[in-house]
Length: 371
Image 1 (cartoon, rainbow, N blue to C red):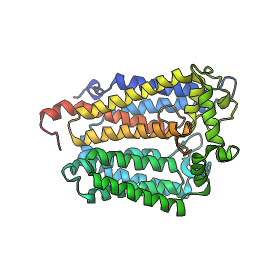
Image 2 (cartoon, one colour):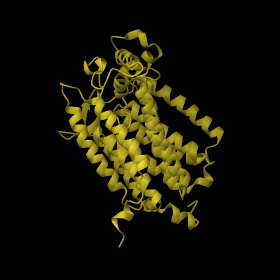
Image 3 (tube, one colour):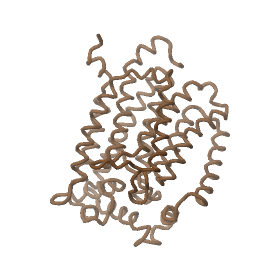
Image 4 (spheres, helix red, strand yellow):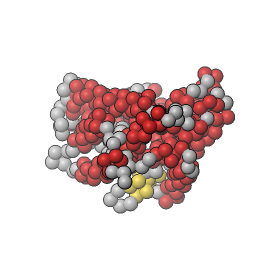
């Protein structure tokens, strides 16, 4: 009988340690001395559940994903959830994107991103020699496009952008030709024009216009972006101290536990803290890339790279909008931001990536390199 120790043989403290450090840094940033700490208290519960999810994700043998219909079934399930949330989901800050279950809520767009990584990894792994055929670019784009469209309807422009980034990143890694890549960008520009004309709400258009001219409407659409940049800059070298961020704790900076937690963190931890933050994220990404390099099959390689893209895209978009380099899209940053759906999804994804290492030596020895 296989021992529990063998099930958890893939556990990698070099990956888990920076992840836990980032999670605790985000938790501390949420804490308001002497104030309301509902987010802080609920996040502790979510962290415990996420850790449990990571450990449980270490147990399965994910080789079944390459040959079973699980990936397609999961994809159809998240599509159904995204449709259902448009019917009975609760509306928060103008977006109908989550199921309200009382003490907590579930946002199906988050697990949809992980499912998309699984689907695309399986699709491209089976067609790695035919990736030059534009048909496969189109079909994979349909998988991503359905999710992207349903998420845009909510509307959640930030998560839709992440879905597109995941697809584009995996297409590039899989080996897309340059002319096909240029065609993709051309189609992307065309779709953006269509979105601008027929899909984006006025407030979303205003956010983009404010991004181009941040000082044009400081008291209106540009308020959040302006307060965020002020918070980041006021942290200076070593920050104002944990719990003493005036922009966040005095609520000049809205949504500082979620969409603008990087700005709140930078204000309290300063430039030194930001360097540490960047270093920890770099360690996580480096570790995932090392998994991909050592992967026994294309599926594991593409899945692990997809998880890295998931973390990196959230990281760059979130920080970009916090420092005024990108329009405000309302997007969390992995590990730091409050929220159960994205935290649990990311921890489970990391658990799956670690578990896939367990069988890599055996597969490499068995000549299964390109299965």
